[in-house]
Length: 310
Image (cartoon, rainbow, N blue to C red; front, side, top):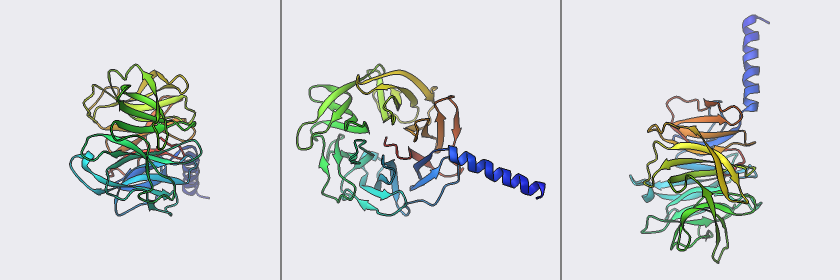
């Protein structure tokens, strides 16, 4: 074997071993949904020809839920979308909603039911309520989990069936809660405490698989401004409902760049997020960060770890 051939073989082996240690994720790239080992070249998209956003990977590892934009508008809250499910191999695509609503940011329950849940805009208001359906569900079969009379937004979920939500409630007021769904009745809300909550907005919140960590976007103040947010990781006590020991891990300087959608990867060793149209991976053990998107001119957004609901 020539030296050139040997070096090529060593490079292939090195790349193969690196790929085995890197997590997989789903993500948006130029309007299409991809599933790729982070740091490797993008594989063939599992959706194409549409504008598909914000995939979330089921805990069983075989389905993605996402929304498809059907009507664009300069004001995002005026988009018209359809909630969709697809198998991770690209088969089994079906709609969960009929494309007449503004349906945003889905995730999955972790209690074994694999229930897709998402946020639906209340017609005529800048307010949302929480919806649920099922794998194989059809438009019109979705159900309300919260009343449209007050704002509620689901971010993440925990294994006992509760949803991690932000809400402005008639009696409890604005805050972050673990919500116990009660289809057909009134859900139960239990407040989650965090010392940053009275000072600004926690957004795109993701509870780790072990439910001992949490990551989120944070901005000071209560006027929504997406560029300039800082990404945090913190300890989370699901029983005491507390967020503590907060550590900024991206954009601590609050540079006016869109840092967003931090999501734990499978195994909980790292957090993937997007910033400035690229994907990055933060490793918890050593605090290192590296870029893992590979196409220089593409727009990458909304990463989501394999089999790890938000």
